[in-house]
Length: 376
Ligand SMILES: Cc1ncc(C[n+]2csc(CCOP(=O)(O)OP(=O)(O)O)c2C)c(N)n1
Ligand SMILES: [Mg+2]
Image (cartoon, rainbow, N blue to C red; front, side, top):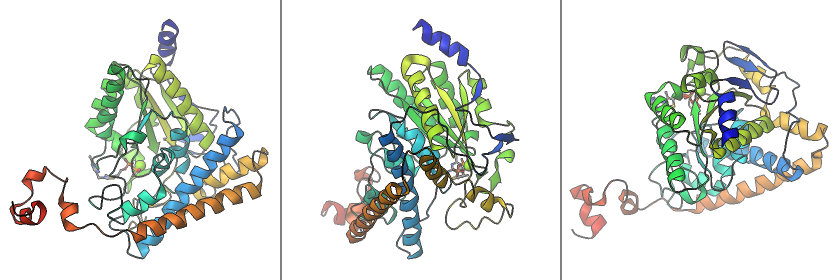
């Protein structure tokens, strides 16, 4: 315990560049070089390295298929993508243990998949099908699976931070060694709930890890108009907790920094703030035409794609052959095809079923009662 206190003291209120992220930051913006590989300082086994690749591809291809279904008007509502940011959610969630909890947001499908949610659930959910996890009552990521340690977020940004602080507190009271990870965007960090939740976790030294995704925008608002700090991780000093900056497009670095933070938090060190510097290559959702971005931005970041960067890394370091990677991709595509077919074959929910368990069933509008409760 003494050593932990010392470690905590050493880390208190400091912002560190993790895992040798060498890129420049200019008013908080940060870009790896075009030919960058991933960090070589890793504890990942060769099998885990391939596992990470599988989840990166799964995330990207599930989202691509969702766009496809959206264009066929089979998706009810919007499609929110994490294109260009996949490494942050996948790498961080991969560093956790089974009993740990995550609360992902719309850019964190990768964390949902790493937690063991199957693509079929995602497809059925987006298409509001009866077999989907919320039975057609809600869309995209508004569902959870507590047994798998995945809390579905509500839409109100910031509000999952106090909820995850509560999860961390509950874990402590039940003497469980769990870590709670909450994801948040640069925009969501400006909310009051974010402050209250993180402050409480910091004071109580709860095992909460906040992953702040600096992806340049909140809707169309550039991050510099959102916050006056250069780096989101600088805010850690205001809570007296360690803050780390990681290259969010380096999947191994994201894994390593989260693994270290989880060990620190689990060992009694308390809350940690990790800022992942990345870039949102799609608009807020598929309907957003991104008219507010600079002309060269997309090409600039396409050349810094986290998935092709990881492929280059694996091949360069003899961690995989091109054929092995192709095989993984083929397998992922097979799984997606099968799961889309399953989700498409699901019926839409019956009105009665969809109306139940939304509010207290006793306050179902009177006009619906006979249909739902059989004549009451
Ligand atoms: C409290 C609150 N205010 C506004 C919104 C509307 N809203 C939804 S997403 C979004 C932008 C979020 O930006 P950011 O937090 O940077 O996350 P990103 O979309 O970039 O991942 C806004 C303003 C909301 N859901 N909740
Ligand atoms: Mg953002």
